Length: 228
Image (cartoon, rainbow, N blue to C red; front, side):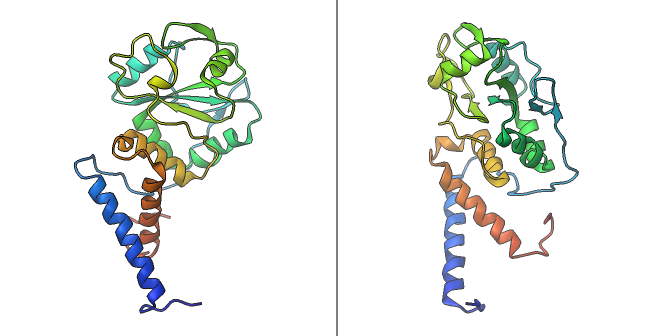
């Protein structure tokens, strides 16, 4: 059925979108301004593939694999620390780098706001956990309960009072596997960076509101600043 400008169905949809956006604006009152819901995807950002078979972004954290030091370095740079587990031959990992992070606006946002330590699910490099325990990457993955790739672990922005701890106590949110769309990936990183989980632990509500914003932009193709 074709919707006309006066169609009740169209009106209901418009009111629903307005309600979602209005609710989001109220929920975010006093928070930092949200970045645009989309942006310029080009020029594309190509990853590099290292000798271990993993794809890698050139700006990933140059780490001595002491996670306590990595956290301190990220904090000093005004960024959030995240630990990303990947593995050779993982099609979702390849998609993360070649499809999602290849989009310029997503890559720029993550690079500017996060320090990411990349670990190999089956790797043998020694990593120092937050409690001082030294173990191989694969043993750290097992200790942390990581069984799927890519998996990203977002650390809290402040670990004061958690010295000597490790694991879930230090994580900002529940883990979400990264085998989803570019829009969801981008929204997740915005949600974490701005600590919106402190207002509402339900990421889906935020994501739905951002979808509504994108749909509104599509409905106004001549709007200044719109990108393809």
